[in-house]
Image (cartoon, rainbow, N blue to C red; front, side, top):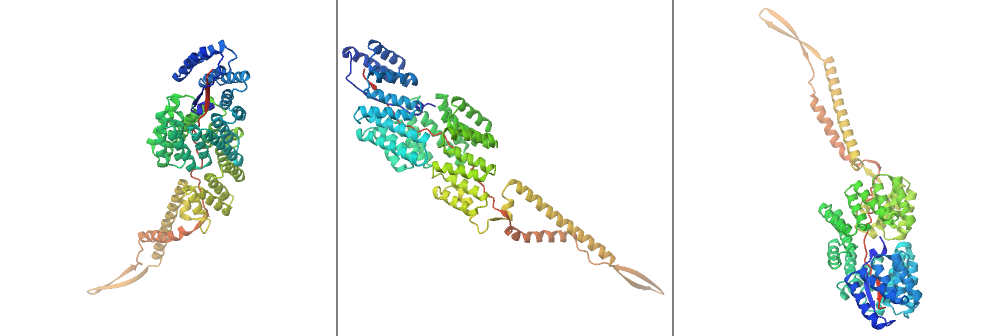
Amino acid sequence: MEFYEFFIISFAVEYMSVYDHPEDLEEQNKICFALMDSGDHDKALQSFENIIRQNPKNSNAWNNKGYVLMQMGKLKEALKCFETAIKLNDENAGAWNNLGLAYCNLQNFEEAVTCFDKAIETRNHQYANAWNNKGLAQYYIATRTLHGEEKESKYQEAIKSFEKAIEQEREHDNAWNNKGTVLLELGFYDEAIKCIDKAIELNPENSNAWNNRGRSVASQQRYEEAIYYYDKAICIKKEKDHLQALNNKGIALAKIANYYNNEQKRSQAEKCYDRAIEIDKEFVDALNNKAMLYLDREDMKSAEQLIDKSLNIKEDAVETLDKKGLILFHKKRYKDAMTYFKKAVTKDPAFIASWYHMGNVQRELKKYDDALNCYDRALTQNPKFAEAYNAKALAYYHKNDYKAAIKEARKALELKPSLAVAQENLAKLSSPSNLQSFWDFWNSSLFKRIVGIALVSLVLSLIIVFAFFVYSEFQRQSIEGATTTETTVTLGNKSTTTKIEKLPKEMPETYLIVIGIVLFILLIPEIRKAKVGPLELELKEQHVHPMSESPSLSENLDLVQS
């Protein structure tokens, strides 16, 4: 998705007294601006072209034509118009500003900064809109090309640019909103909220600020509150402009759905993504997030189809490449998954999620040192990435380095105390022995439970067989050891002698079986205490599913009278 599709444009109309034919142009300008306000870009374009035909050297008319073309998404044509305006008048600050925005739309942020600096210099550094737009370009340089200290430093430069805009124009709501957005990226949530609230106070109709207000509370996992703010943004935005808030609302609903395993919320999230896609069939953010929704449902086929659609729209989109790899990982196609993760980090070496996912692939392949290197690369970009520390704990555990594993698990919990899997792993690692009980071992997986039941059945069977053997042997020995006694009975004159065999008392076989089972039950407590092998730590949430969140930063195009 191009730059201009990410942001909602706010317009700053500036009036300049540079007329070649003031009497004729004044009426034409009114018509042009009215057409722009009505959204009739085609007729507005024709009107500016009429002005240019009257005077091809009118720099402001070329600038305004470029302005209209920008609104129509014709970036390269717009850029040529701004360049022509500057050739005709090198001091046309508005044209320099708009040329910078054209370069931003074309992802050439360094060139954009140069143009904004020229616009600021032309106005003796008193150009709030250009300062605001320069901050935007610096923000995107930071997010797309830098990492670590360099990234944070560039964010600080962006904040200074926004502050310059605010210093020159205290009611510049876009600059307040943009400053708050960067502070969100830096994790300064309280300061960010103050800036965004200021933007809303200055302009309650600033839908970008409402959208970012939702993002500010969503970052603190207050998703229900975030949905309220997204709905405010959606109500304000025009039909074509509320994509970001719809997408972000879908993310919040999906987070709630995953936490509570609530399919109803998941369906609501899907409706938000579908509405955004209905408005813009090439809205990659919504396509990607809908794919992750299907992944949560374990519908790999539908998830992969959506991601492939996103890749057809923009084949080198980093987040899309990462999500494709994630789906392949879930399908246990580790080598194919690694290919996409590598493509992502080749395109953007600062993309944290792909480094993390590459570490998970290496861990599954039992390449634990390589996995640790990948997790460290992710932590270089974001030292507060708790899940990466937990993943490192697992890798160190498999290397039998329990001390290092405990250290990493503790670090994960310092950063994110609510990370349940890190709590569980730390508890296991911190036990007096790094061995687990017999009972825990056989309950650690469904397969082991089945095997355990089979073994118990076998043991009981052996006890019964042994009982029968003992009983049979007892019977045999009893028969062999039987004693015979003679008894004489006298009836009248006759005496009769009778032989009587005396057998030992029998031991019923039921007694033997019961004795065996009782002995087994009595031994269970000792069996439970037995240590049979290493603890089996499990990274239950193996993957970070990065949702394609849509920030709303506000740029300022300048429309000037010709």
